[in-house]
Length: 432
Ligand code: LLP
Image 1 (cartoon, rainbow, N blue to C red):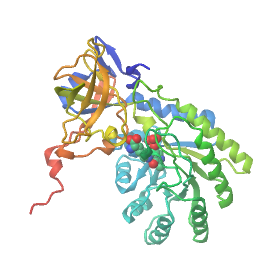
Image 2 (image 1 turned 90 degrees about the vertical axis):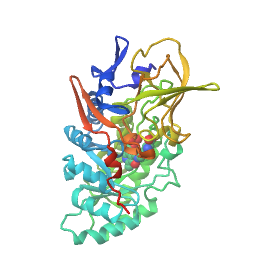
Image 3 (image 1 turned 45 degrees about the vertical axis):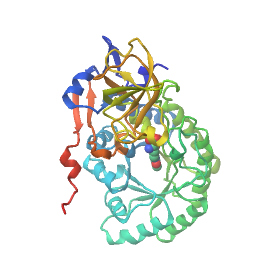
């Protein structure tokens, strides 16, 4: 595929310059500084609407998209979810608070987490419509905690560990395999369901999530069958909910096939659920899909400035002002990224370069061995597919400040998160 196809839908090369939603990226970099994160509104909107359209087309019952907030969440992102009527998957009280501040209503807040604290649980009981129970001790704690609150207990779904993995880019992004820390075995699910029955807890759903950034939806069938067997055995109410998680993949590098169509993923899930439920005499569940990356990754672009260039043996290092603190994905998973120069992206004198950040860590590398035209000090580099799991996993290593974030629409660039200040870095500190 072509490198530009990794970028947001509105990305163009015009007059030898990369633009997004018609914006001059050099002007944005001068105004807001670098590293800078850009989100293209049109790409996010299209991804959300494509999912909704695919659900309408493939699934005859009610169905919803739940945005996995862990991919990228702040006030504006939370507000954006409600423009598309999305549910929001929140991990813990921090993400719940962001969702609430962004106006996400109770019925759209769904809470995940593998070891939810009592504070996570009380936030969930106060603000969420659904808690996805990860384990038996959590269930006991919910049952103990909620009578003392004045709130109605949210719906409870049980998280199944299906014991079936999907093919992902790294072992650390698999969650469905037998030895995973997530969810409950079938036996534990039965025990949890029994506990809910005895204690009159509002159990009405099943969830699993097999992993993140996969393109082959076939392992999902086995997990769906297992979940449907359990739904039957547990005896869920006729109006029940089923979430086979998220994880649909995106393209990070031109060596990969283009971002797969969400319709393909939705169809595979819908067909298996319709067929499996009918075969077992189950009513069709309300279907919930939980994409994060495939909604926002392609919308995001990281903009870095080259500050130094070094030739070391066969390697040419372009040293940039962004790196592992805003994008730890190469360091963590060996993720393979691509890049375009903002000016003269199709320039000559192509050579192989590697791109590393300014931090005191040899692993502070974003891209290894990529063919690029001649790059000079001061040039801007645009890294595509930067919208998911960059800023949400960012750190302040070396006292780095988290970058500013802009939401781009034609004719409008809105600052949706300012760059951290030095004061922000010391805000929690207490002097001796
Ligand atoms: N649902 C649950 C319960 C999840 O745990 C996740 C992701 C998702 C949905 C959304 O998955 P997505 O559609 O975004 O792939 N930091 C890693 C990814 C970790 C994903 C964790 N859970 C990465 O950068 O690749």
